[in-house]
Length: 457
Ligand code: BMP
Image (cartoon, rainbow, N blue to C red; front, side):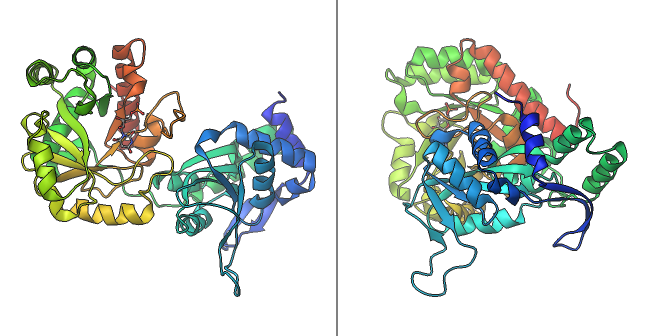
């Protein structure tokens, strides 16, 4: 395959980047100007561009593709033709007559749409476009961008939980042009100066450390989790989605030293028995100092949840330190979880989830108000008073072919400001679960240290 550099230089020949002094729409003077529209006038280049962009993506996760008008429209069309992903068209303004639709084409609620953008600067235009698509019941999880001007837009969108894939960055482009003597050292310095001075400043508030969170935490389980994180230098929760007691206990013993909590789906254990499953599990939790998180995802009226929590064969209230619960039953449905922490399901990691922006906002209100809630499961940044738990984490995969969508530990910690990463198959399916757990622990903890300005120990 041709090199990316060779491809870029051919694109450059079409006049897509100009250097000099340009006044941007915002009034700022920029030493370079990017306009990718000429790419659409060269069909061979457009087709190759489409394939470069498609190669970066987990295509299984998308049902639709849409370009942000206008420059990305031909790009999205070319990608649709190359991948057979159905195209939808987003209007700039709604039609004044007829259907008044903003989105044209054939789509269904719940479908996941890949968004294509030519250039990302502040990310503001994408932030305006995405809700217009989401308001139609379509989800947007990934955005693919041809050129990142590196002024903070990518980070802004990633903080909102979108995966942003970029083909080129402006620094990479400058380096290639400098090597080919299209740019002199002085030009590059001027561009770097400009980029340093023109970052959008959305991220000025710094991430709190676990120690700072501990100072303000009110719930005893939140405190215990934070203390454990500090004591073990770990923000890793392992999901033990195994089917037998033996596998569960073996796994817990092996990875126990590296985790803050072990997340169970206790109802998938085929040979469950309170004496042989739960008692030894509790001993291991004490031995290795981790908490037990039962991922029951309650979703009923308060009365029924109370029964499900304390009765039946699993008697979750007897052993779990904290549980997950939907908040679909409303505020009072969470009252029954006395003496445990509740992690509210605000947003799910799977493709086509119904936990869209509106749901997330409403669910968050309930979670923030309820004293039993210590945090939320979400793929988006949460307010500081809630701990954020993020599943859908993998160092190697982007999906599982069954709708799961993965982020890297770094992405979750840096961009979503996750407090605890949740890893399942990445650990228990690995040949060596212990070293996999250590690898995830280090990835999560080092990303946290980097974000809080602490150095790795
Ligand atoms: P894995 O890393 O193997 O994909 O496992 C993820 C775990 O997190 C599973 O136990 C799943 O039930 C849970 N989970 C998730 O994947 N997405 C969510 O939005 C909420 C979850 O609890």
